[in-house]
Amino acid sequence: MESEERAAPAEDLAVGETGAGESPRQTYTEEAGPQAGQENSPDMEPAPESGMPALAEYALEQQLARGRRLLEAQMQIIQSVDPAVKSLADLRAQPEFSRFDRLVKSGMAISDAYKLACFDRLSRQQAAAARQAAINDARAKEHLAPVGGGQAAEDGLTDEIIRNYRQYNPRWTRAQIAAFHRSYKQGV
Image 1 (cartoon, helix red, strand yellow):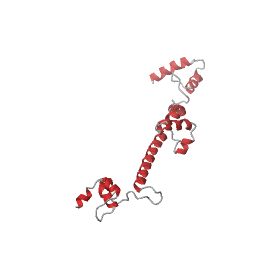
Image 2 (image 1 turned 180 degrees about the vertical axis):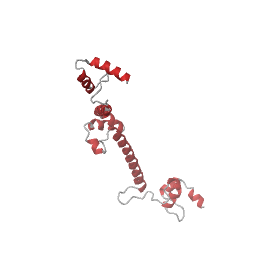
Image 3 (image 1 turned 120 degrees about the vertical axis):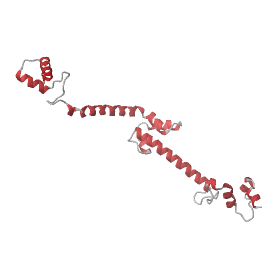
Image 4 (image 1 turned 45 degrees about the vertical axis):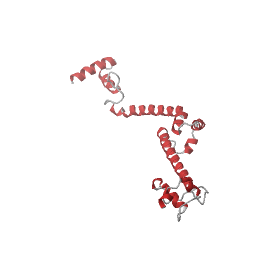
């Protein structure tokens, strides 16, 4: 008899018919089974504060949690492109926000919309950063200049080396000094 009651169609359970001595909640959880993870949870009773059924409220919470995770992932992508953006308020403060907003409303992913809306500004910033990095790299090697100070020219002579040669040979040209300096270095 008990196996016949459990085999009752789902329509009967929805209407509220149960077997002898069973409450509607017990029958519902038995039908859902442990696969659904609802063994001891309330089913469709309204939650006291919202008036929503508990399952619908749980589904809404899960959907909101997925949305938050997606938003956090998109914000991390935006931060990798533009470290100045740390929150949605920072997004709203961007000069390109209206274009960004239109792109998002048209169905584009948040990170892609940000990249597209801010492309010009971000590319200018990236070019300026690359230019500054090249300047910094060049300046970082100044300590490797030859002894005697100053930058060496194509012939390898610094201003100080030329001054030293001209102390003894004031009429020599730079070409003569370079030729003598090369021969001197080869002999050493």
